[in-house]
Amino acid sequence: MKTVILIGALGKMGQAALTGLGKHKVITAGRSGHVDHIVDITDERSIRALYETVGKFDAVVNTVGFCEYATFSEMTEAQWMTTVMSKMMGQINLVRIGQEYIADSGSFTLVSGILNKKPIPFAIADATTSGAIDTFVKIVSLEMPRNTRINVVNPTVLTEAWDVYGEMMPGFQPVPSTLVGKAFERSVDGFINGEVIVVDA
Image 1 (spheres, rainbow, N blue to C red):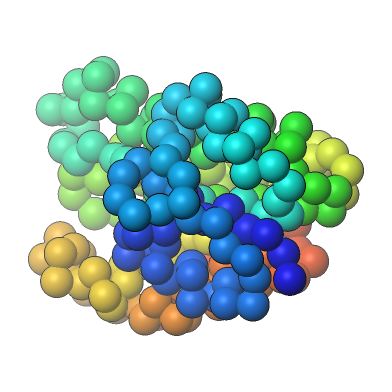
Image 2: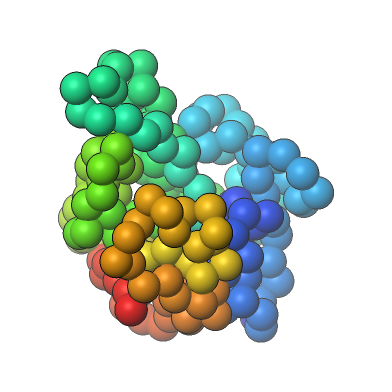
């Protein structure tokens, strides 16, 4: 059994990840709600406080990254930076700071998203930062210390979230949470490193 910090545990993607972590001790975290710890991934001090409070842990699974949606011509610098600081730098900082605290041979699992492979209108910031995280994971895996690993789950829209996102994504086939949960399980319990685990129909 591993001790796994699951960030974004109350969201749809967090619940999907949870289905693949059943045999582990899961410590939940998020910006609000009934979780074990409150954390804001856009705040370095908040991230460090989370790790120091938890103490010993074997894996970090992140399922959050806020994105702004607008056309390229309408997207302001502030909207770009909101997305970059959450979806991209927030996740990078989880790893950058977390490498100081995680157990030897531990693992990080980040989240990107299918829109960098199958773009839709208004999602340029989401697609760009998802692509950046996919690249980050591939490259930083070559530098991870103490036999630690890192992967990223790149999922399409969840069946459980289709009522919210389906209208924005015509022609997409949603996948069930349990299938996405298997991707997170493969990252945490397998031996792969530097992989982009695409979950698509």
